[in-house]
Image 1: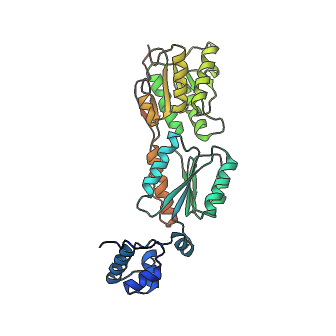
Image 2: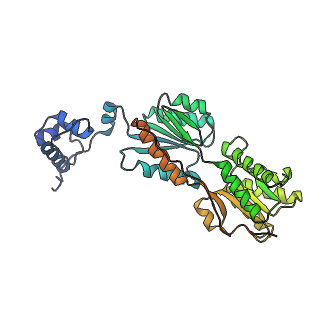
Image 3: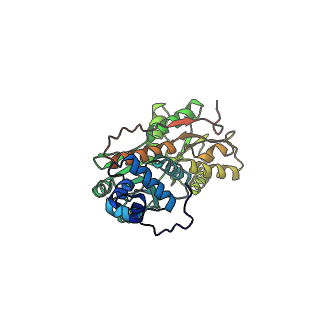
Length: 339
């Protein structure tokens, strides 16, 4: 049916009801989905809505139902490929559910994270998804008393808070084991932040794998980083200036590996002919570096989908039958076998 070109955005529920020949309560029940409406009335209401180009007052509906139909998403960076993949997965999981994401960033500061979460709660979000961050588990559990929360990088299990981690320790063990299988014994490691759970798990995996293969840990080959490209560059500069011998570098994440690769390039050191490099995350750009980066893949898009599905189920008081994605090693061209 052709829409009325003279339709006005001020059309009300009462006007729709009058033209459709039903009560305003029937139109409201139809719009809110709170009760069944007969097929005849449904068709009549839909026809009038299309003809009058009626747009429901979403704010008014939210006030009546107590639901904003939004999911707050706390990320740590709006520009990072790491978080972008997870947010894309959340967005896909919410499609068709009637919920839309409302995204804010905490920038790795606990106070800012708490402030942004308060802002989201004030906007009456129906649930929260937290992507990593500095908040303590106890803080998240307390916040979950006010709104359901699903978190990544946390091991949480309560009626209104659920969180899961990927096995970063296992991923680090796989990366170092692969380097050892390729003949490397002097393996440098550029760490992540010293207060970051994933970074600590990767450091433990590095150390334990060396010990498992009877390789003595060299403290001088462990250099601090912060998951940023600049820290990878500076760490390699420190390694080279120290005079320590190493044939491979395990970087705590891919961004660190990018910086490490740049530092090696500036010194005329070839990858992998002179030094092998391996990362962690498998960002999209890692397959396009020179050479393409061998790395541990975190399936972040799938992680995002799991988080999105979990928060919708939690809001609906459904059982959380979530299958957590697994890490895997992606072998490309940045590691060379040595004799």
